[in-house]
Amino acid sequence: MALKHALFALTLAAGCRGPLHYEAPRGFAEAARDWRSIHYKASDNVGLKLLLFDNVAGGTLDYWGADLVRKLAARGYALREQSPLRSGNDVVGTRFDFAFARDGEAPQFLVVSLFVTDEFLYVAQLAGEAPLLPRYDARITEIAAALLAKGCLARSDVCNGPQPPALVTVSPPEDRRTDAPTAPSESAASDPTSGGSPGSARGEAPSPRSAPPA
Amino acid sequence: MNRPLIALVAAACALVAAPAAAADDGKIVGVVVDERTHEPIANALVVVQCTCLAGPIQITTNEHGAYAMNGLPPGEYTLQVLSGEADVSKVVTLGAHAKLRVRFDIDPQSEFKRAVRVERRAVPMSSSSSALYMMEGATTQMQSREPAPSIEQRLQEHSKLALAERDATAAATGQQNEPETPPMALPDVEKEPATSPLSDDFARQVVYSGAMTLAVFDLRKAKERIENLVVAEGGWVQSLHGQAMVLRIPASEFRSIADAIGKLGRVDSVEFEALDVTEDYYDLQTRIEVLRRTQKQLLDLLDKARTVTQALDVRRELDEVTLELEGLLGRQRVLASQVRFSALALVLAERIRQTDAPSTNDPFPWVDEIGVEGTAWR
Image (tube, rainbow over the protein chains, first blue to last red):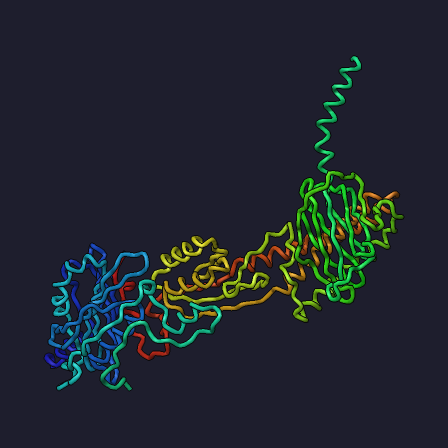
């Protein structure tokens, strides 16, 4: 009886930790935490932010990878590199390296590590000034390995799904490398005489190979 | 003092005074013709006004439609021709020793123009000049030599003139009977540049305004950047309450600045409006000109008032006219300011998870939370 209670308490305690559990990596201090995000800060202002999202039916790594690249491209991010990763519990993920420069500001880097399980999307994003990237480049794998991506069903195709195809973004024009309005709004903003016309996003968006989530 | 010394002093005074007297030898000549038939118009009334004169001059054209005035001091002259229904004014600047030819092409049947092109051509002066106002081949009358009309008659005349001018202006606008050249600018009101960012039409007066909602990650930085953008282009922040601000932007830069502001974040909503106030603007201008003319003539009448009652009557009218004129001038300045500087009402919203509305109808706005802005630290 005591053993049953102990097991129950252990299970409960494990559940209370939530699906996002992460220890501060070396050189980072925890600045904020809630049940679905943790934000760390390095002394050189590089930030590491982990985010947790609920997955939906049909949401796979290549679908969400393409979604990520397309939407960030629309905001002026340029994809530089894309490479496979594995989480601490061996879930397949992808690392996306983006470059970003707002008008008149120093260029910055953004590295997004994306893991997709049947229940959740795990995002580990590292960002800071571009010259600091080499200092953290080799640590991305280490940071990903410290993440336990939960929510894999038995014999899940999602957790072991294929890597997204090689995604590309068209570098936005210099004057558009900003935190961007989306195309329709921007179009309207650019011409007071028009009510705005639908336009395409700035980035080259690869179509998801799988069907959109229901 | 002996006689030779007195003669010497007198001669010196004459030498000094001579250039001043000689400066009053300007000449304005011209002809009034029917613009449809090109026939000269006889007996057209030409009224000449200038602050450099003691009072207005009225002359009539001869049988050849010609008129001329000699012995005029340099200054800015307003020439008004009245014939039939026509009432045409021109403003010319007469230099010292200059001779100007000012031709009027009018339509006595239905003509009404606020101001038309001014043909100014200086011609060499003849050696002879006169200090008298002379008419070439026509009768010349100075107003002061005419029996002065009563104050009531003058006021009634000006009221009729004002109403006629307003009606005619409205009719001209309604019939798209645009004047051939830009209307005469008001001296007290800053002349408006071509303010429309969309058109080169100088005469158009359009008020541009807009409203925008912008979601940004860093409110403080966004406000700084927006203010810098606006100030750099000659605008200013008219009001700032929390995350709402009203920007006044030079109309010619409105489009580019709104575009630049839109790039500072995610535009959640944007709306632009254009309001053509040309009719209001020139209606105000017309009324101001009429009131100015009335005011000036009331001042002339005040000078000529012979009794206290007359003076008080004129003064009362003058006060009313001045009050109305100041009100119209104020309205015109506000309107001019609205035309020159467009207003953009901007509401900033912080892009945080709880309030982050999707930028499109995309059901998966998760990427809105990903990016340098919400991750890197300053």
